[in-house]
Image (cartoon, rainbow, N blue to C red; front, side, top):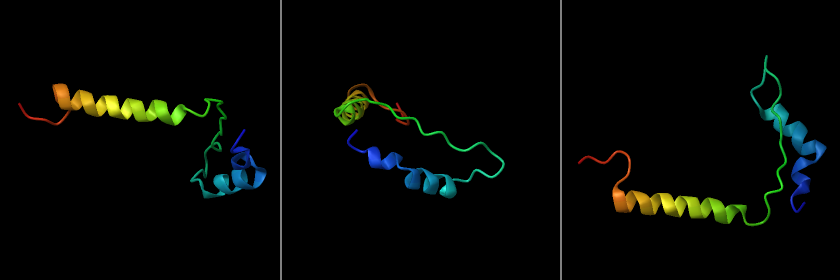
Length: 63
């Protein structure tokens, strides 16, 4: 994992300390191996959403 340091004990401990979790279960950290191109899928989804809004109109438009 390229960013495995983000799951170090110190980082997870600090995350729990900074979370508003009084009276609640602590946050769960899930690790997913989505690969290096997951950012490209997100960027593509945003671009397609913007294009769709441009071509057929987006939310909040008045007709």
